[in-house]
Length: 368
Image (cartoon, rainbow, N blue to C red; front, side, top):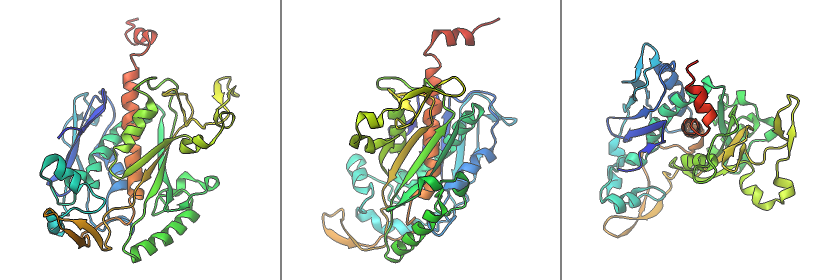
């Protein structure tokens, strides 16, 4: 299967299926000497694992990571880092019925058309558990960024039509909210909304906002290698994402240039700055030193208990009810996945950009 490799210099290869023996990732291009332990990776995996709240699938998985290579005495060696998570709570019998038909909203039909064969147990490579490899790789990238003073904070901006109040956003509230919303009042309203969806055997979508601070100006390339294009591609590769916007995003289409342009100024430190950040920290595909702001729109969980119409492999129209253990909303567990993809993208683009200036290369190889 093509398409399981991400990145040019700092790259990851993910592998495994939701109901196979396990899942994992191989990270290549990580510099030697980075402090790294399984606990660093586990903190990220714990944020995406199932069964943590009533608003996620009741599937109980420990999702314990094991580092198999690339780390010695607590530091990376510069060689490929291989990590694995074993599956321990598969109930493949829940999915045996769907081998003969295509679930609405899922990749079943597309997989059959492409490969002529599919792993129907929970979606195989199309399952949300595929993101384990992304998150583990993203944890390594986040460690690199932390060494450089770069921070990534993502949170749930909205669920259904319930959105956080920008004036009430407090990052410390993210982990206090079962929905990872930084506005606890909005979180309570969203919880009530989800309770209604669960009673009606339905699901909900939402938007995740991601803010990256500390990124220096000059990251990204001006044509096909634009930083915003790379971030959009990375986040759009997450299975349930149907839209990505940077900065003011689609709202910019409704503005005049005089309203949307970020005026430059000199700040109190004597540095070039912007009065606003409608561009979301990226101009001409290159970071401008302001916080990078992106948002990702997630569709509702397609596996719902309500009866739906579909077609089986014999070409007959049928009615089905999807069995198994499913999230009524995906976005709270996907917050760390968005962070991971942003981190992977940023590290890779920064490593690519290290060769963009001759003076920087000369300083690096200066033997004096």
